[in-house]
Structure formats: C-alpha cells, structure tokens
Amino acid sequence: MTIASVRESEADGPVSAKKLTDGIHLVVDALRLNEIDAIYGVVGIPITDLARLAQASGIRFIGFRHESAAGHAAAAAGFLTKKPGICLTVSAPGFLNGLVALANATVNCFPMVQISGSSERHLVDLQRGDYEEMDQLAAARQFAKAAYRVHRAEDIGRGVARAIRTAVSGRPGGVYLDIPAAVLGEVIDADLGAASLWRVVDPAPRQVPDPAALDRAIDLLAGAQRPLVVLGKGAAYAQADDQIRRFVELTGLPYLPMSMAKGLLPDDHAQSVASARSLAIRRADVVMLVGARLNWLLGHGDAPQWNSDAKFIQVDIASTELDSNQPIAAPLVGDVGSVLQALTDRTEPGRIAVPPQWRDELSARSAENVGKMTKRLKAAEAAHPMRFLGALQAIRDVLRANPRTYVVNEGANALDLARNTIGMQVPRHRLDSGTWGVMGIGMGYAIAAAVETGDPVVAIEGDSAFGFSGMELETICRYDLPVVTVVLNNSGVYRGDDASTSGDPAPTALRARHDLMIAAFGGRGYRATTPDEVTAALREALALGRPALIDCVIDPADGTESGNISHLNPKGITVQR
Image (cartoon, rainbow, N blue to C red):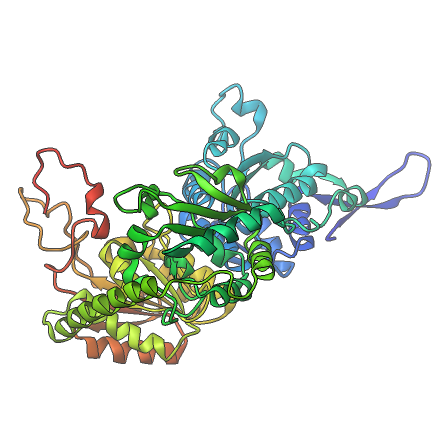
C-alpha cells in the first residue's frame, strides 16, 4: 500500500512516525488488488489525483475527450475480458455523460463499473447549491444493475468489492459506485486501510443445470423436424467456444449467429444458416436460444416472423429472462459453458438428428440468397460514385487476410450492410451497436479492443455515427493505438441527397473531410473514391500498425432511411423517403 508518514508529537514522550493513507490511495489499492489493469475516463474535480496515482501505481489510465466514449470503452473491455471495465468520471455533468454508457452496458449485459466523484451529502441533501450538486446515486439506480455510495474511507474496499462482484455475477451489467470528494480526501490509519481491502473470490461461479431440464431439452431437439440454434452475444461473452462448437457439431444442428456471436464458429461453417435467416426463423419448430433473448432484434418471437407453433429452449444465466416474450418449453438456467458441456455429455450419439429435408431447404435458400448478394456486390464493384457495398467488399477482402483484426461497426446502413458482407472467423472479434442500437460506441469500443488485446482494430463507421465520438481520434493518436477508422461517408444521416425545405441544410445533411481531421492529431489520413483505393489504403494502414482513417466517399443517394429497421418509423401522414 502507498502510504504517507507524519510526525506525531506526544506531550510527554518521544516523537513517533505514524503511517497514514487516504481515500484516493485506497481506491487505487482496491482496484490493483482485484487485478484491474486499465481505467478509462476523463479527469477533473475531484478525481484527477486518483487518475495520476493509478497511473503511477501501474494501472493504465486512458484519458478520453468525453465521458460517454470512456464509458463505452469500459463496457467493451468488460465484454472482451469478463472482468468489469472501469470508467472514472467527475461529478454531475461528467457523471451524466458516463451514465449513457453505463445504461447501455446494463442492457447489453456487459460488466462495467462507473466510479464517480460527487458533492458532499450534507450540502446536496439540503439542496444548498454546491459545486456540481446532484444526487448521483438516485439517478444511477434507474439505469444500472446496482448503485452504491461509500461514506467512509474505511468502506472503500467493501464498495469496490461489491461493485466488482455485482457487475460480473449472474447476468452481467453496469454498476455505479459513488465516492464523495471528502471520502477521497479522508485520511486514516494505513494499517486500518490495508485491513479494509479484499480481493473478490469467484465472482461468477459456474451454474450447472438440472438433469431433468437437460433431458427435457434433448427430447425436444430429438423430436424436432426443423430445429434451429440461435447464438447470441451472451454466448460470445461466456468464452465457452469449445463447448458450443462441440455441441453444434455433435448434433449437426443448423445455427444462426447474432451479430456479436459471429465467429464463435467461422461464418463459412457448413451448419451456419445466416444466409437463410428469414426462412430459418419462420419455419423452425424447435428453437434453442443460447445467450440470446427474444427481444426486438428477434421480433419478440412473434408470428409471422416466427412459426406460431415453435417451441423454445432457452439457455440463460438469469431465470427472470425466461418467458419474457414467449413460453419457454425447456428452460436451461446456468452459465453457457456448463449448460453446453452438460448437454454434450448427456446426448447419446445419434439421439439428435436433423431431417435431411430441413437441411436441404436451408441450403437451397442459402445458395439462392448468396447468389443474389453476389450479383449486388458485382454491380456495386463497378458503380461510380462508390456505393456502400463496393467499399465493404474491399474491406472484407483485406480482413480475410487479417482474421485476428477486431471489427467495430456502427451506423444504420453501415451497420446493416457490413454485418451481412463481412464474415468473422474468430470469436469476440466483432463489436457493434448491440441491443439498443446505440450510436457513438465506435471509438470507445475500438480503443478498448486495442488497449485490452494489443491487436489491430478496424472501426467501420457511418459518417453520422462517427460524429458522436469522432473527437476520440485524438485519444487514439495520443496513445498511438493500432486503430484504423473507416468512415463510409455518404454526406448524410441515412443518405446525403435529402432536399432542404428551407435556407438551412436538410435535417439529414452532413459535410466533412474526415481524413483531414485525423491529420490534425498526427494520424494518417486517406481519401478513397473507389474500391481499389479502399483496398490499397486499408492494406497500408494495417501494415503501419498506427492510427489511421480512411474517408470513403460514398454516393449520397446510396442508403435507406433507418437502414433495416425503417418499419419502426411512425407512419402517420408524413411522407418518408
């Protein structure tokens, strides 16, 4: 423990040295004790010295330009490592900026802890108008898995331990830890402080399913005529790659990966039905959900998108998720790795067999859809001005030669088209907008992937989505991270050819030279107007291994309002493009 020594005078005795510590040292020591090696944040009153001390103690502090991006980075770090990512923010406005990411982490089930300094309770509670006065604990409770406040320095170790365990146990999520400025500055005996810290032991223990539940699920799959496995990002987070692959290949079941589960098995795996998604979910009669939820991304399990007679098996760590949208005929409550291992061990060879007719039906639709996509890509390859698909297939081809590269993806058309164009070969190497479809995660996620792994990152961004966190290019350059940002720039939100109805630009219009932007921060900028130029720029940028940005000039007329979710727009009498 880092301590201070003071000279203590005694009235009738010798002068002695007493070892002291304070709240700031205790926070850093508690984090180090729990093997936290990176903090993402923005400094200011009252946490600047905490960041300095963390850095001096060997914890890497990544300083951002905005708390929202720092919070998104912490959330992505939690997803990639299964340890809670730590976001450090100042009070009130800074806290609120970070709260967006904390809420998003909770919805996406990413373990994250936001630690914020705050004003003094005796002033806040009487609303006396203190500096950045706000009841941050009350605000955070609505959006996080849990929220705690530390009132005494001697409780900092307990608060950090509770936050870490809560963030990763059961269904992971975001936790808020409030530490008032006076607690950070409180000085206490060093031995008392040391004794108040502890390391969290086994915060996310295995949960093994009941044998009867396993048999129920196996019986359903064995009797299915059109079975389907859906792999969600919870399956990717579980890091149970071997167990998932063994079960899928042992049974021969067709599977559909959700976007962040791509790469759990290679996207070109023979049992993947990603190319026949609509048919698979509409026709399946028994569906096994693995770390996936029947939320809006899966149409809530409702007909006509799904077979109205479909029976669902659900693997989830939280029993409260079951029956949230559809009856779950075979609940399997437990961690993904334990459940899949138990299913594999309990399934007799040949017990589950996929009828040939179902395999053939899915294969035929996959071949048909692949043929259609091939024609679209061919047409886009020659199009001028460049189209989304022209740029994306160039990116796809370069990434095929660099399969360890992490892909971060956000936008509307940029997200939808990249997800369907760029295959993944490695687990947890695709991070995107997730359950809420939040824009602004891009630079934070990319920074976290680079910091936590050291591997190259390609962030594929719509120009609108990039604008939410684009200033973090400076962060990427300051830390010299191997991040290549590819902006698909069609000069607009959704598209850039929307006509104005006044003297101002249209509501969807944008205009930027992003390649010049990164040059201001010391990175390498490229401007690409053809797929060949995209290919050359991306190859060079990845080879350099340093911050770079490729501004891909896309036809302003290319793009669809709201991407693939235009049906969510209210219809009314407004004429929508």
